[in-house]
Length: 207
Image: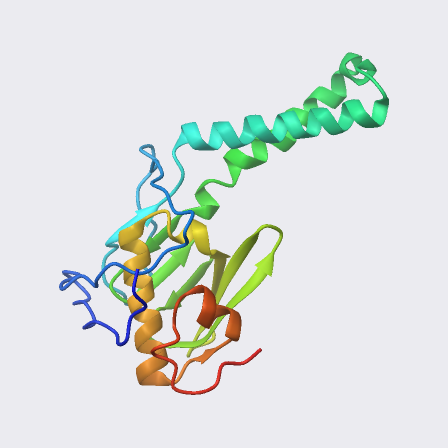
């Protein structure tokens, strides 16, 4: 996908129209199933309604939990030198508890976006059109987008996770473009490269 050269018009805070064009995504992007047992998060005070949201479907989360269970069991077998640990009942409780963390964290990973805001879980939110810093930081086998707005609010999560809902990502991405072009947001070099922001940068990126 071609890198954008300018931001699209800001959507109306209530109707969300006009919707921004489709934003660039990672090459490994694929569609994901959205949860059907919950709805969008609550908008920040004074902000318009939620337009897009995403949380993993239960089936996806159960798959992650099962994978975590297998990994922990494999490590236990390797350290014990066999399957003797399987006879210890309380170790099974620890295994189940660790695997359940995937399920318990699902709501806290729910992301919701309005025309000019983004929330992650119940505690993180930013004004997406008044971003002060936009950074992408490397993590093990992934990249994390770290955002801070003009009021000091912060939100961060993995880039690929934000892109699970393409329309949500489009809303956020247009806010990122506006923040750079109209408000001189500070952007690090990794964000410029990872998010395809080369054409809209107005000042040298930070490290």
